[in-house]
Image (tube, rainbow, N blue to C red):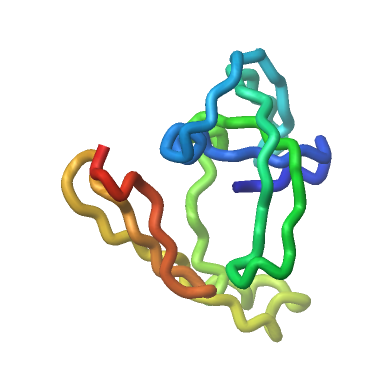
Length: 126
């Protein structure tokens, strides 16, 4: 999920929405994305609930789906290595970029990020 502060909208990858069984009618949306680019794509407006693992926090949110890649030519940057180019970033202890563990086509994909392992995909292998 990504939050787009300029548009004050929250977007959910449409593959994730599909795995979760979320489905609504598509609408065309235009959004500002990275590198000052504008993208137009089909999106499903959805109502969702986000909840903490311990169940102590829960919030209803409105999200829109987005296609797999709306980031243009954006690539993952290892800021741990690049931070020295800017004096205000030198003191930041950036995490290493996430690493994916992939199986066969359609299998769940695991990702090790700074907050630990996450996984996306269907437990049934669809």
